[in-house]
Every structure is written in C-alpha cells, then in structure tokens.
Amino acid sequence: MKIEAAELRILKMRLLKPFRTSFGEQQDRFPLLLRLEIDGRSHWGECVAGEGPWYSSETVETAWLMLKDYLLPLVIGEDVPDVGALERTYAAIRGHRMAKAALEMTFTAALAERSHKSLAAFLGGSRERVETGVSVGIQPTIDGTLEIIGRHLAEGYRRIKVKIEPGWDVQLVGGIRERYPEISLMADANSAYDLEDAPHLAELDRFGLLMLEQPLSPGDLVDHAALQRRLRTPICLDESIESARDARHALELGACRVINIKPGRVGGFAESRRIHDLAEAGGVPVWCGGMLETGIGRACNVALATLPNFRLPGDISASDRYWQEDIVDPPFVLQKGGTIPVPLRWGLGVRVKTDLVERLTVRQELIRA
Ligand code: NPQ
Ligand code: MG
Image (tube, rainbow, N blue to C red; front, side, top):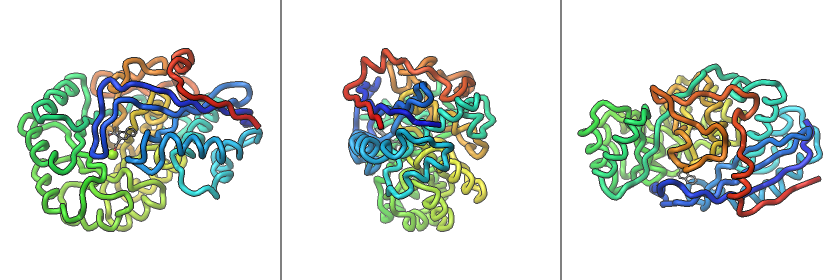
C-alpha cells in the first residue's frame, strides 16, 4: 500500500466534566489526529498522548514532532506491504510509542479496509460486543462519588473503577463497599504510591477489589513484585507496560496478575497482540484501557478488545461518557448488559465527521513526500 500523503491535526474538545486523577485535573482535551492518504482514500487514526507529560513522558507536542519530522518522512511516498514492514521502517527510533501507535493503527485500519474486513475481524477477534466499565475521577466528596457511581450503574456499566491517591483511598473504597457490597469494583492509583505504603495499601484487601491498578512508578517492576507478594488484591499494570518486553519482565518477576493493554500506549495493534499472547500463555487476563479518546481511538480499542484473552470489562465507555458530540458516526452507545457493539463495517468501522473535525481543529499540517 502506497502512503501518498499525511495530515496531522490537533483538535480542541471540551470534556463534559473535568477528569481528575492522581496526576492532575483537566477539562479540555486536545486530541492529535492523523489522516493517511492511501490509494486516493483517507484513513483516520488518533494518538493517545496527553497534553502534559504526566501520565507518560509523551505529549501531544512530542508526538506531533516525532510524526512530522521522523516517522511520516520514513513512509510517505513508500509502498508499505504490511505491518511488519512498517514496524521495521522505524525500528531504529527509540521510544515514542504513542506516536508510533498512531501511525501503526491508522495503517492497520487501512489494511483491514482493503481486505474487506472489519478491524476486529482483521485483528483476529471474534466477539460481536465488548464488555465495558467506567472510570470515575477523583471527586470532592465520597457522597458525590457514590451518586456518580449510582448513575453509571443505572446506565448499565458492569464494572466501576475509581481513581485513588494518598488521602483518597481506603475510606473511599470502604464507603463504596458499604453502599454497593456486590459490584465489580477496582481502583487506579496512576503511580501515586511507594513501596513503603504497602501496609496502607494492604488495608484495601478487605474490600474484595477486582484489582489495584498501577500503584507504583512506571519503571518499578521490582517493587511491584514485592508489593504483590504483600497484597491479596491482584495488581494490574498500566503505565509500566510499554512493550511486550516489559510484559515479559513483569510476568517473570510476578509484578502483576492482570495487564491493562492500551494499543495507543504500547505502539499499536501488533505490539498489543504480542502482549496479549504472552499474558495468555502466562495465565494472566488482560483488558483494554482508555485514554479519553475520541471515537477514532475508541473504535481501535473496541476492535482490539474482541481478542480472546480480553477477559475483563475495559475502560471502553460510550462516547457520551466524555463528549457532548463525538467526531464519529455512529457514536459508541452502551447497550443492555453494559456492552458496546463491535462495528461491522470494513476498516475503522465508523465514519469520521469531517465537518465537525474541521470546526474543532486548532492546528493542521499536510505532509507530502
Ligand atoms: C488510566 N485513563 O487508565 C487513564 C488515565 C488518563 C480512563 O482512567 C489526558 C490524556 C487525560 C491521558 C486522563 C482512564 C488523561 C489521560 C487519565 C489518561 O490510567
Ligand atoms: Mg490506569
């Protein structure tokens, strides 16, 4: 497939409500979109990098720079036959997996379309719908959190994740358990703790959490393994797993019992598949995380989550969890039983609303050979 040209865009989109995690709060999201022109057709993708280097070292600006100056010049004007060839073209570039993922996922959706397959079918998935959960940000009060959780349960979400940080953890989870003793509940710390907090985190053990996500620093697989030995609650790694190599190391060390895969974090679908397969061989379930994506990134997450070892509900919420109006048609809607149907159309599976994208664009650049 010959990649004829590429376009980068940054949009400005207001979240319905501010989202607060242990690393900060934000209300405006600036999604970075990529459009590839292949055989005269447009193919859209999304980079999951955040506005600042808080969740990861990559940002919208670093990803823009890597794509524009390094990644896209390697492939524009080139005939790239498959994903393996694509990955080889940029194998010498270190890191920047979110920037690489945007290119790899856009290219893969184009390959799926050319093969007359849905993205899910192209990736080898078989589910017709994926189970979804919802991620609840840090709130001013526990009562307010309970109310929000009640609303999400009424909407049909199957699993609740709450963001925690020191001072907003044991009491919060205890309060939720008192009101909702039976729900599928988990907590995500986004690296807000140290190994010295192990006795405190062990207090969470009595609440029967599905898992505790990313309690310690991203690079700290060894301390996660030590912490896991002291907790009954399974540890799930998110930020720590940037590659299949990281996943292999984490599994060998016993640093986690669950892995959150975000294709946009690990370099794309092919690397996600490798992590998925390693985890499956190790008896470790995976689930698909979320990065406050638009419908473009959401479509990628939904497709990936149709693979067999995605055995837990993901953070793949409906479009209206975050957006007044999504930039894809149809938007992703929650169905009865807390599932989202997998698009059947070839390629990405949803149409990009280019008029809306145009109105939301704050920066754009066309890149040619
Ligand atoms: C997580 N997501 O699982 C992430 C964290 C996160 C849905 O909890 C801008 C860019 C804002 C990336 C907010 C969810 C973000 C972001 C939160 C990632 O850890
Ligand atoms: Mg997380």
